[in-house]
Length: 203
View (spheres, one colour):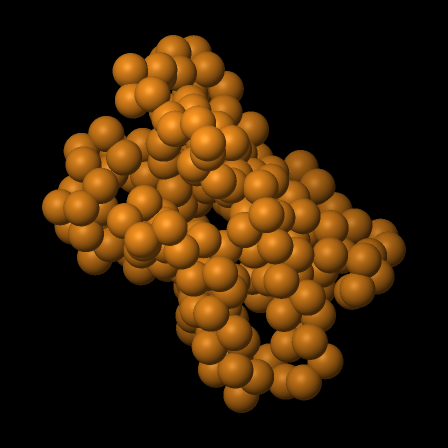
């Protein structure tokens, strides 16, 4: 088994490209889900749910919800991870404000939309994780547990997502929750299967 070399780091240009790509993919997935009246998992899903309930902007809610998790990130994961996560959260907040004016859907099947959105978000998160960042919230906890215990980040996130979906059932109803859960399962399966410390050594 190989182990990551902490001296191997991505360049600033590589990180910048990865952060724009990852937040664009996650933002596109979120636009698909909100168009369908669905939610995603993790802290972004919590922010979407609060946005549905209050009418507040997702970008603003998402940014505020993540603030308490920065303290955990700084204490347990270091300033570099915290700074990168802060930047990623800010970028995603901007993406969700810009993309609705650039993209629209005439036809979007809820099952296909949930599955594709889950895939876009899962791949986007994996790119972000591999460049030493996260979208804050439960992602910070999941990555910390994986680093310290080996328990896959995808499984931690899936447990949180199931709890979130049960709560959301009382807000958005039955069928949308089923499709939302499908998207969350796709997202977390991609992360759980592919994001392993022994398979990727970049930082």
